[in-house]
Length: 190
Image (cartoon, rainbow, N blue to C red; front, side, top):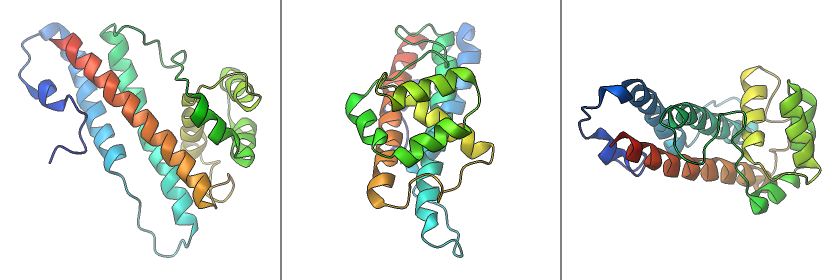
């Protein structure tokens, strides 16, 4: 029953009598629901879409994962979790994964071209040019271009299984990061 929940969910569910953490706890509850959806997501059913559904599933998994991460970071910041910064400054470096993502030049070019905001475009350009290994900027850009309507599965290099696998790795890596961060938040609530 608890396999899709964060590792520290059982400790989190224990009654808390600390009213000063009430807003943070509400945010963490929203995070748990988003995390569960992203962690247990296996795909959408759309019979007439064809093979592009595989690309949409990958994109949607990254999207769902990023929204969980975003919700968690707001709460973690409120709890003053050591080592975490605000959402726009919290970089998550992973050279091995970054190198795999960079191999999908079609994806990176699309994200740079269709992203909005000088900070994100700069981060993506630096990522493309091997000047940073911040993988969260890729998830953020995917979330933005998907939610604002520019992104479709066929336009970004998700046709091949290996391309989708790398984006699935990104989602899994961010879910693991969220799980660890959630544990730190739960410890702060005690």
